[in-house]
Image (cartoon, rainbow, N blue to C red; front, side, top):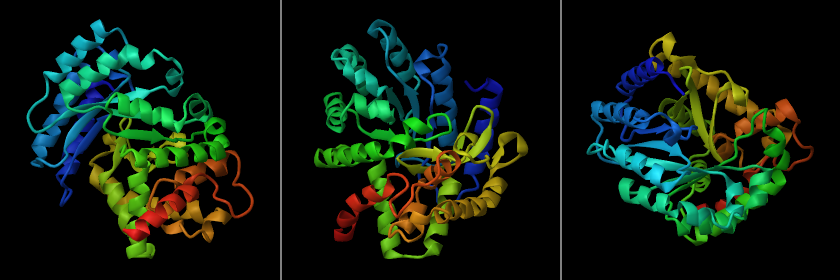
Length: 348
């Protein structure tokens, strides 16, 4: 939980930084990780007011500007409902607030799970207009639910967007990249099922955009252009005030200690803009290096689109923990997924 003092400093630095960005059309602020309904009363409301003030103070309006907060929405309805209602009363015009439900896939084994919390999901949709869903993949998670079961759950309860995360760290390496073949098959099945049912999800758009960009304008300059823009416009700040580059692979990944990278700076160090201007070159070089040091990546037909995503963090973790697989096979899960989307992108 971020302290009030740190929260003030972070918002001050971010508001200052937003003012230096030209052509910014949308601001999305996500207060993540924690189950925010478990925080002290009034905490989410204070977070939202700060986020809304930042958006409104930027002069950017309309579009898809919004504030998000994570929660499990788990608990007795009689206790959860009043909290959700109080939070919803805080919303000001022009800056919607959306809950992101963090799902433990193992709970899908419980036949009463959906029924138990259906009222809370429905109330959230009524109060906030939409509710998103996020979950972390691991060996145990995919063995607890099939791709179809997740799609069924999302459709039944009206979730607007599904963020599927595969975030390998030193701590969870065996459960994530250690099970990459099994997870790859699950991701392919989920992509096919979700696309067939028009369920919006995270990694499909990322991979399609990367394929399309490198098909139209192949070359290193495209990689730098995309990485520089992502570095400028996609940041994560932790509860210590560390500022980190955030990319997308299978869900969000960021350049922090848990992924084997150093933050670009801290809010205590000064304005964010100079940090970004220096870090974007280092980040671009790191992404290229994290790919080219893997033999299987060097001659892969998807090298360029892969470098425009966050899959380089998987390479970094493989190198640290287990080494890259021998042969010319993809060291993680990207190639099979790019294969899946390539024909669709080529035909567009």
